[in-house]
Image 1 (cartoon, one colour):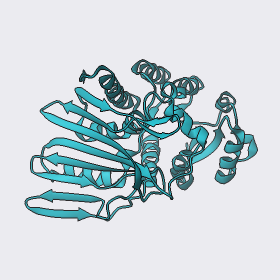
Image 2 (cartoon, rainbow, N blue to C red):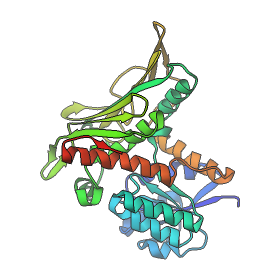
Image 3 (cartoon, helix red, strand yellow):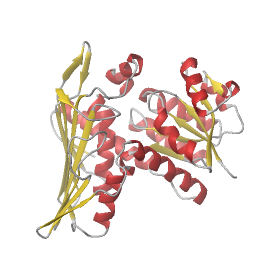
Image 4 (tube, one colour):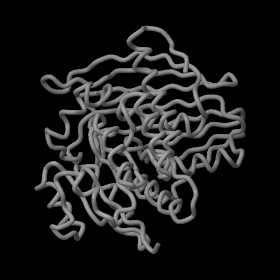
Length: 353
């Protein structure tokens, strides 16, 4: 096989970032797309060089095509489960947006279906492929800060004149718990942060969360301020703090949000100083050890590079026979993280995983 032939279900705002690596890699191509909004699909199809015959409004029609190897599912969360099962039933490998489902039971069914059919199931996660995060991981694996003790993640949401223009219809489902599965910050975007915790520290064993509420528009509430803390085996800990500041002006080309990570080891500390945007005018990675500070700026920092790297890893894995990141099983573990935080906030106590 000379090329990985991909099809997209869902051509909303985020699809632009998912398409980048496919459009730039000679080993892959986008061969068909689908969206219930046919005009939106046609606009993307024209941009990506697809003929009208390869643009659909019903994904079942698209899945009937024989020349599709992989389906990228970029739908609201409550549709992931059914679309994934339909794609697997049609004999297609699947890359599904995070979080993979609304419950662990749904995730189990998706994983089981892929295994039974002998197909790949990837849960799309990009933050672990963000170049500053990759550099931090490499420094840690090189022993620069010793044994890991804690991870602390801060997520700031605000406003920006340069942020993405997201249509109201694409926003609405994120503020509807039955469709999103939780809130936009702690459950939806929080998946990225819990994936970072898993990536650096491994599987957590206990979670405790306080999740507040902030109105951002009539009838729209962000799940912030919030603090989620979790415990890892071996006397190690992590925390996520989400804050919405209605007058905080941010420098970003994507969502009006920025993130920072602090990882503390037995002999040093590493900071990743940015994510979606650029709040701090300092190098993207900072390392402190032995009374000395080192900084690292020799890497791309645009958020889009995390998507390019994630998709490229899957293309590499496809041709080498290696598993993708995240596998369905790994995505299930991160989902358990996110659901435990929701349950802890409801119960007012910690939840064991």
